[in-house]
Length: 168
Image (cartoon, rainbow, N blue to C red; front, side, top):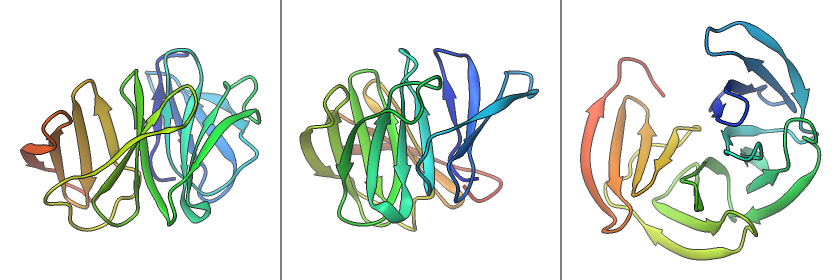
C-alpha cells in the first residue's frame, strides 16, 4: 500500500491495496475492521471527506476520482484526468488538490463537481510523489522521500520543511 488516509466520517484509517481495488479498514487503535472494494485499481493515495465520500489518486490511470462512500464504494461521482501518472490527492474541506507523480503542478478542483478551479505551481518540488499529499485550510504538505515541505496555499510559497526518518 502507498498513501493511506483517514475517514473523518467513519473515524477509521483506510489503506488501499497496491495495485488492487481493495481498501483495508482499521480503527484508531489499529484493530482491523474489514475491507471494501472500490472496483478500481492503482490507488496511490486515498483521502476521506467529512460526509463519508472519499478521493483516490489512481496511479497508472492518470486520474483522481471522488467516490460516494464506503457503503457505495463502486459509485464514482466524478473523475479528473491529470494527463500523466497521479501521485497524490487531498481535500481541505472546500477544494480537492491533486498532483502528478512528478512535477510541481497542482490542480485545484471543485470538490462537488470535479471541475478545474485553477492550476498552479509550487517552488522547490523535488523527487517524486507517492501518496504523500496532505492539505488543511490554507496549507499544503508535500511528502518527498525523506522530507515534508509545507506551503501556503494563498501565496504559493514554501513556509517550512522538516525531515522524516523513513522514506515517504
